[in-house]
Image 1: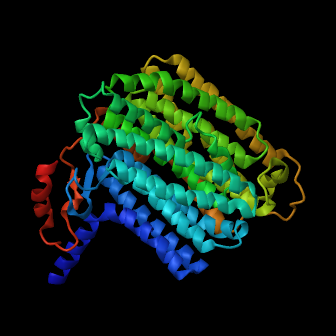
Image 2: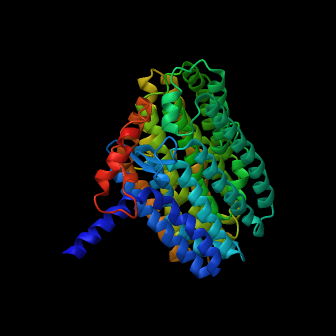
Image 3: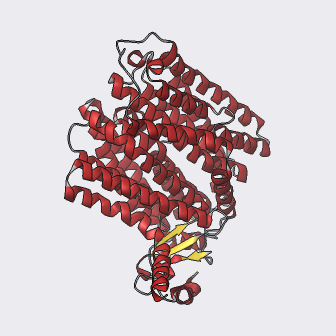
Length: 537
């Protein structure tokens, strides 16, 4: 009986440490991979780490999907003095997306990386774990400077991952260098903005910032901080016209890297932008509203049409999908600019839906690269008939990208149109539909190439190995599942939008304070923690 009580106490303690484990597990996996130094061991460690993170993110999301938030105090130091991890429905959904894509990408990467990278496989998996850690850290932390630290962790590892594509195409080196220069500029702008906020408020905790910044709407320091943060994050999120790094990085990076980055990296940056705009600054700031309406809506529309228009004329499927991503980012920014619950919900759910959609499409391209050695239309002609499962998966992903009813992409675009009508912006709603018609053009061109074009010499081409095929099928099923069963994605997005628009991120009482359960005091820790932290929130 005593043993059962002890096991239950340990389980409660581990459950309380989930926010920390979400970051610690992949972060510690990276040096372990380098230490063991074997390709097989590296893959297993990376896959196990991603799987554990996926379970943790799902458990965290289930705790906050109905509302409220989790506050985790690092090292027992209460915020705002100490670093805090704070999880609500908004970042819970993004954490789940990042860990889901990472877990599904790992089996795909095993065979894809062997074909595209002949050496340094352990370095690849170590860098991927660091990138994974950085993206999740950006999303989960409640400390503004910590966002910058994790942003740099993810960025530095990403530059290396993109450069690894040089074995197949030397242009990956210049793509990585361009990304390095522009990414460094974006990070510099962001940290300068954080410095302005610290100058004005004397704190770095985002919840404390949200409280102290009130009444400083006219402060030039606060406004300058806002401008620097938006530009810095806009560059990281590939917001037009700060997007020039993205097409080359996605095109020349190894296929598995492109799958992971396209589904997660820009989403994490957009989430951080959302958090600062709606939780720290909050929408009632007059200059804030003007920026969203005067700047974001035109830039979002430019991205939607410009990215899609350029995608129509591409001859490389990988590059076409890269420009398509720029257009899809425009939809997310447009949802933010609507400043209503439907618009912000559309942004949140589109980040999730576009993540799984673009992941499955880039996986399909990776399968073509494996068999044809290239993603150019001239080289993949007719492969849809030779690789029937891969072709079917690309069709499902393409339909979701367009926004056909019954797919995940339709849900978010429908919400976006609804948000435009709620604001009496019917011309914007019409433009959303017209931009989707551009997606029909470049997606149909892919269908035409892989099914109707005469096959090349790849007469023996067949679907890729099961380690690549199964992840593609899982994501294709997810594109349909989340287009029909929307409780998880729409539920979390709706809760997140309501909380963001209400600005409920100040130093309030958390619905669950997991920091109150230290590892070395499992017995009765819940009450003790409540007493210890209750006065700080």
